[in-house]
Every structure is written in C-alpha cells, then in structure tokens.
Amino acid sequence: MESSLFSLSGKTALVTGGGRGIGLAIATGLAQHGADVALVARTKEQLHGASQKIHAETGSNVWIFPFDMENVDRIEDLFESIVATTKGVDILVNCAGTTIRGKAEDVDLKTWDQVLKVNLTSVLVLSQVFCRHRKQAGEAGSIINIGSLTCHAARPTTAAYGASKSGLLMLTKTLAVEWAGNNINVNAIGPGYIATELTEPLWTNDDFNRWVLQKTPLGRWGRPDDLIGTAVLLASRAGEFITGQIIYVDGGWLALL
Image (cartoon, rainbow, N blue to C red; front, side, top):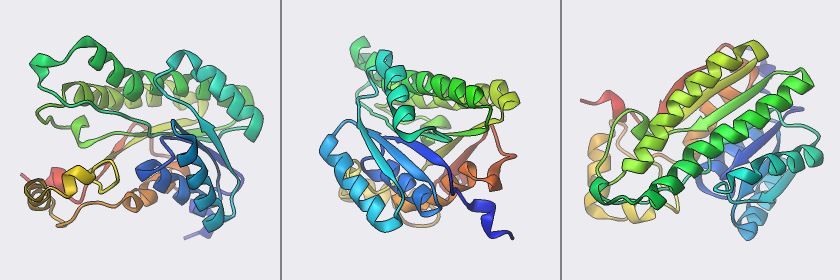
C-alpha cells in the first residue's frame, strides 16, 4: 500500500469542539498525518492547552478560534476569519455538541432549540460556507460529522439530543448526494460510549459502567484515540470513494442483539 494514501500533508483541517475529548483526539490524529489544524471551542484557555499539545506532538501549525457554535448567525464571519488566517480549509470536522437530559414530556422549547441549534443547525451553516469556499477554490473537500449511537437507536431522557443526531445523519446523506458533483465528500462517525471528561459521571458510576461493559462486545469503553483511524480514512485519499456513510466506532455495540 502506498504510504501517501493516508497522508494529509498540505491540508488544513477545521475541527469544532477541538479543545478536548473526541475533537482534540481527532485534531491531533489529523495533525499526526500531516495536516495543519484550526480549532474552535468556547473556552480560550482550553484551546491554548490543546494547541500547545498538538504542536508539541506533531509540529503542525495550529490556530485557535474561541467561539460558541450556538451563535449560528455569526458562523459565516467565523469561517471568513479562519480562511483569512489559514489561507484555506480542506477538511471540516463538525464535532461540537451539547445535550440537556430530561423526560420528553417535560422538555421545554428553549432547551429543544438550544440542543438542535448546536448539534444540527450549526453543522448545516458551517457546512454551507465550507462548500462555497471549496467551490470557489475549485478543489475537493471532506466533511466529517460526529454522530452518535442515537443516530440509530433511542435512549430515555435524550429526546432533543436524539432528534439532533438522527437529523445529522440524514443531513450527512443529503449533503453527500448534493455536493458529490463538487468533489466534497460528506460522512459521519458514530462513536459508542467513549470515556472523556464529559462522560466521567457515567463511567465512574458502577451501575452504568457495568451496563456499558455488558452491552459492548469488546468489553471496554472507547477512548477518544479510537476515532482517529476512521477520521483519517475519511479525510484522506484512502477514503475518496466513501460518501454519505456513517461508520460506527462502538466496540460492536450495535451488532449485539
């Protein structure tokens, strides 16, 4: 196999939610394969730490842009600033997300709108400006959306989150079909249960941890680094004939009856 098949040398990747957890792991993995990276997250201090880590480990250029993806009316301005700084974006990873748990009968519209705005609407808007950017440049591009097991199945207390993630899956397919003629590949990754700072209350809960391990054939929680290989595949020449797909990185969760 050609060593250049998975190379991202000369590419720039924009990763939202890139300050920690899954977003940081994917950004690091893309940089390890040669990409420069632009990180977007709400917390400036978090972004500084992520930037220093990635640059120290990979030597790639890293730029940071503090921004709350809930501000969808300012996303176009954000993207223009990123392009002006980086001189172009080849890969877009939509990883920023949020959830607010509660019984479906009690979900208020403010909560519903907030979750869908961050998890779904912001992805559409950022993908739109990315598409226009790649068309203007006359070059190919890759979009990778971070989905969830709830793209496929439901859990109690996650009505808004599940609706946003299942909607993200259909958005992924639709954009893939519409933008294939512009050589823009659009795919999604569906993580299983991944041990991060955000999920610490879950994996440190004995009952929940036991349930996850029983449901996961590989018998462990996923690590953020487990998603790197799939992200590199979808961003590189190795995955150029893959579009409109979701790849579940779940330790076999969905394969188990």
